[in-house]
Image (cartoon, rainbow, N blue to C red; front, side, top):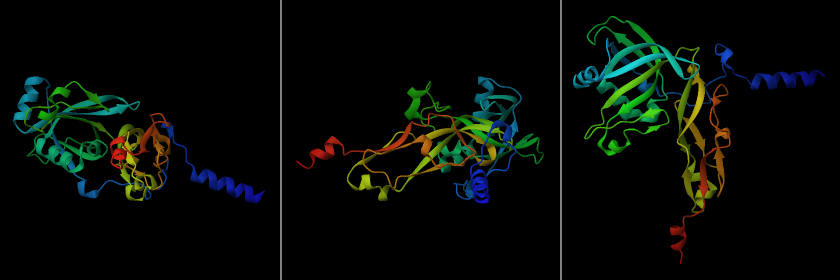
Length: 268
């Protein structure tokens, strides 16, 4: 009877259940999961923007600023307590270029709001998650109305300048919907890929409901044991137990497909 009680205790210690009412609970250790690169632990500086509108936004962009907004997230989607701000275009462009757009949108930053960029006074200092990023680029001008994975892309000829950024406040108590990018590893060890099959990546981002303190910068996807015609489902991704998948668990993210027809014809 004593042995059985010890086993049950270990089981409940290992499996921690997370709910909306448990955001303040002690979370499992993060050491075994990806952590943000401290190299890009940068504070985003902003100034208050009094009004909005196309003319105001155009003036902000002409001055090298990006019209933005920061708000609080409620029920994982809708926001309140909005504040109009502007951020420095050069800083946002640098971060997006270094991290990539997907990784920029899954990383927490400190945001400092000042009366103006020369002032040392701080109106608000808060941790935020970039929620939406609008950029302009000639290559995507025809995609101006296309919304993909909650990131609205809008482009302008000859420029990759950000049009606007939306931030959501991310206190420790927050539960945030995040599309986490996937990083694929172990291709050189995959039995299926060694036989000449090819990697069919179906999803590059997966959406989770995350406690703000454990938002992963990315998710490692191990391909080292996948053979021909095998696939990895969303429900089998190795993530922190506090994360809640909000897409179907049986949807595949990657598959080792058989050799292409063109590759097979090379043998004849």
